[in-house]
Image 1 (cartoon, rainbow, N blue to C red):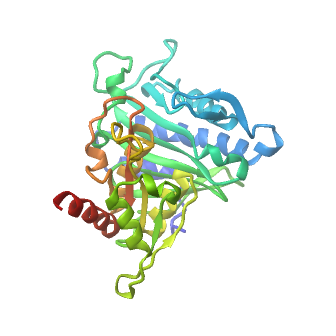
Image 2: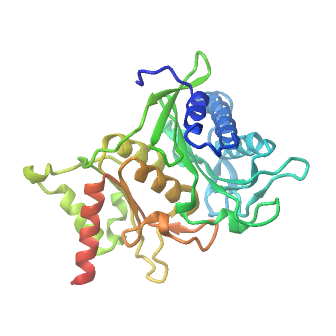
Image 3: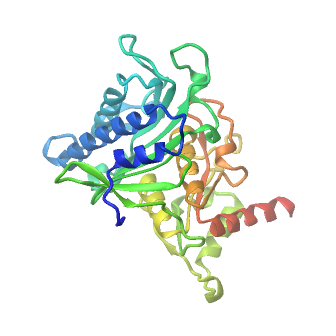
Length: 339
């Protein structure tokens, strides 16, 4: 727990002082997002009592079944963010195209991309779920946002974060000046600073991966996971396996405890060496967060934040974690390439 009693709005205001050119627009965006998070928290807590568990009978642009809470979270964020005058457009994992700001509302210079409810396939099992977001500045001319604005490399992010809906609700974000976490105090309805300047351990003792896909990984990944299981007291192995199946939960644990999270490419179709996770909605935000916390984020071949997006819903492999652990994984990849 932070020694200071600071809510999220005050923290943003204090951070804003570091940038004399700041206009306050970013602060308003985070305020509106935290408001949406409180509404989603309320309904997640009452989901089993309000008949909003289960599937909605729809599929999203990814061809995945949509949960009722997916729709609620998507609508809540859109409605909380579209009229503040700070955004030129939005993009959601649940929508095929960018989400324009209605003409009746003023437009701003920022683009918000978000996964409204990551881990929603686990909702009925009461597993931790969350919202993931990132923010970019508009690069196109005019006032309305375009696809160009919503498909920038991760290096252009001005902010990224996630909101955990678990045993407590946490709001974690970075603006490129460290990573900070806030926990919702339900009795006063405020996000209070509880995790100031989060730093991931240099090395961890946990690996996190869906081992049911073992036969579909490339050989270096299989050998790395086997390495994690081997006993070697000098390198503090074997590692422990922890895998929730909700990216936001697995990534948060990795950020706090250290170690490595892997969702590697699937080699079932050699013509499509893609991962499962979305570059714009998942990989880029967590890439920014982990680097700001002292960790690393890679596809195994390339730094995540350096990828030039080709499409709004592009998928990529994702390996994030402690610097020493990710570097060791990359050694297995490099050794395979030089063999």
